[in-house]
Length: 451
Image 1: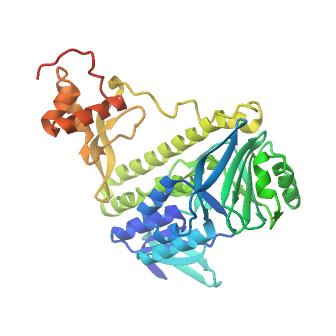
Image 2 (image 1 turned 90 degrees about the vertical axis):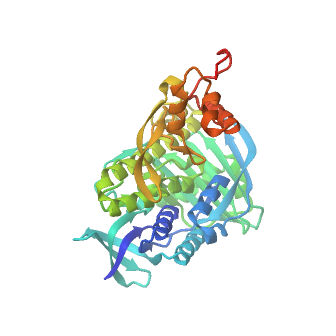
Image 3 (image 1 turned 90 degrees about the horizontal axis):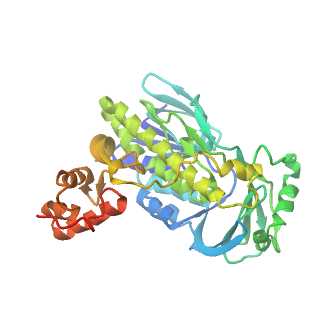
């Protein structure tokens, strides 16, 4: 039996980011990664590239192509203004494991077949690629196996049941590109790699799709794709290659995502609609702060409640933020408002606006958990309707004391008050920024103030 301080199950971006973060904090980390069973391609934006760079995925980043054009037909309007980078996930995931090894993570390729608690943590049963069986023990367990992670009895919030059907096509080599198109019963995403391999995917409502038996899925998908204008360039001169892969893409939030010696990250904690094309970004968003949570739970058990509160509030906040982004994008499609796919998704999860207007009387300061020096601690933050978890600092400046400073002297403009401690130039900039956020009133028209 091999012993490790921290055991990470899942070698995707979320599990990898946690592993690298923990190694940097001095932990011994063993990560178990199951090889991806089928090839896939994913489109990512430049902000995802920045997140991957920050997480330390240097070798994995070498697998992505240069930005390629993406055409979008939505609500009957076609746009070609955007680009995205296409990454082959099998090659990307293998390179990510090389990044982990290079930075000190012990990587094991195999499938987790069972997990049991023991006296000091957890024991995982692993079936290696060679067929050998292995037992791994970890004092702390990180569940990062994505949507495939067992629910383990954790209650979950779910959106509309959604399925994505992916089929490969092969054609002649061509210039990489991608496309999106909505249709009456869902939407399609198509991608073409330079080697001529094409990825055609339909995303549908499970309850209303009336899918045929598995053996007929290929013809069923082809018939629907053939009616889509954006799919034609991807199908021309190409043929289907292989079976159709059906994957759930239902939004899911685990209501409990952390315990005293375990944590869920990435899609294992919350998985949202893939519509935005930022699945990796969403996974990273829920994982980058996890090393500090784990470090606190292990070394400062007296702060366990604070660390758990921080992680679960962050996971829930990210889930509903991404869910509302999807809702608003679905609501832009008005051609089939009563069709089950569009009706449910344009109204879920709620009617709360993605961005709330902020007025000065809605802004307060209070104590919230924050990350500092690899640990979770409490700090005074600024709390707004749009940022209920609080905003701690801006470019290293703690904001709550500065806002309190402004409010202490209502007879002075914010710029005048902030200039006393930050200097005239910085004081003016901070005051303008606070005004733009809705934290303070616009001083124009308030008359002269005596300094």
